[in-house]
Amino acid sequence: MTLLGIAPALPLHAAGKYVAGAYIVFVLVILIYVAIMAVRLGRMERQLVELNRDLERRDQAATEQDRDPGSTSAEPESEPDAATGSDAHREPAPVSGSGRLGDSSL
Image (tube, rainbow, N blue to C red; front, side, top):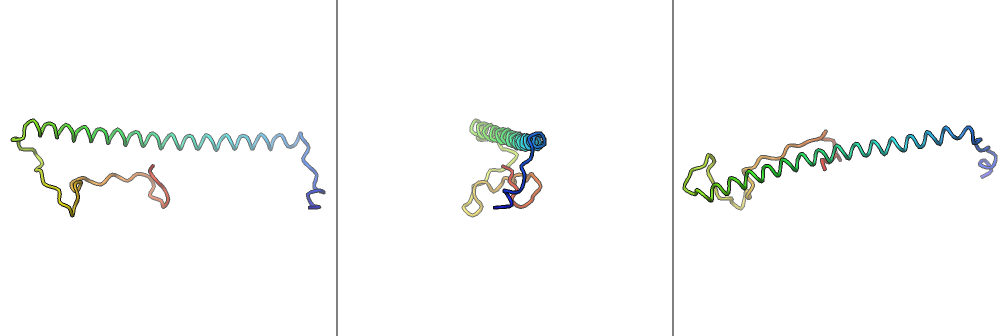
């Protein structure tokens, strides 16, 4: 406790540049955070557009199948079994990011 009492405080004219530096670092950290969130938001929006496009294609194919049930499609229809699930024919989603442990694409 006596060490703090002995140490002189910085004069105001010398402390100003440290305060300004602290504010600059704080603003830079906030800007970097906002930039990271903007990149993530853009990635999520692209993925959402792709998912919506896939759903529209699937719905369109289903309505065409309902209109003309006698036609043969390029892809044979099969019944989903309990062991593989209903989405067994789907490909896995592409993985994005660096793949480091703890990173999340969301």
